[in-house]
Image 1 (cartoon, rainbow, N blue to C red):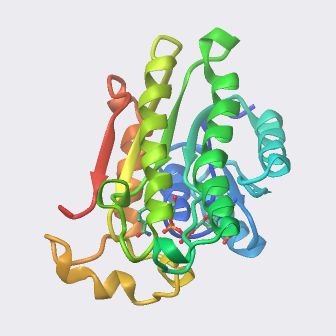
Image 2 (tube, protein in one colour):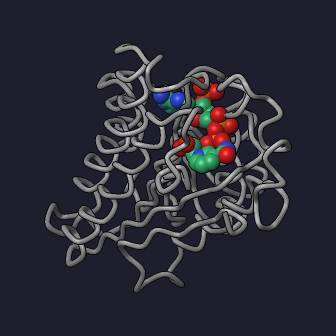
Length: 249
Ligand code: NAP
């Protein structure tokens, strides 16, 4: 069994999740790189992690489904014990007003962005909490600055889902505070990843730069640095915190 602490990153094949995997490997962690659809992208991230001396395995699984969560945590049980969960997988839908939303859109947005994150955290706590015989651990939830801005005219559903992630973070952190498990969240601002293209606005990060106090989008690496801090022993007294990584927005 590896001596390096094992971290599960959901949605680790691209964007912020991939940056977290690469930085975590460089800083001495082993990785489980979860992905939903792009196996070769996940494998490329895992190969980069191995090149840093980490043990890294990929696992396919849609965090918005029970089958997906079961597959992911079957891999955890093969490779564990689990030290960290980076609850990163998240999606937007195409930009639209609330009066254009249908039920299917809401089911997908909340299944992945809220229920999937709560289900992964639940399975992680069962393995990490000293109450359950675990050795403690750390959970970092990827929220969004949209939780406090509302994303009007773009994706209010996504913003509302991220508000739920914030509240879940506060409640879970307090629930397991004496059980060796720290739980925090990060609210990225406008970060230059492919998520904007999936919302139908491929240039969104560049176009919105003028409304950011720092006048630029952030990078996946800049968000990953904050994730790595929250995972680390340097954050040993930090729980229930929500950190804006948003260039002042
Ligand atoms: P991204 O570039 O679109 O990457 C998303 C990643 O999540 C991909 O690896 C994707 O894998 C995976 N994924 C999506 N749905 C999944 C599911 N149901 N199960 C498992 N994996 C899934 O997104 P990102 O910009 O890095 O965003 C990462 C997180 O940060 C999200 O929670 C997002 O809401 C949050 N965030 C991002 C921004 C931003 O501006 N970029 C701002 C605020 C918050 P596949 O390719 O295999 O589908």
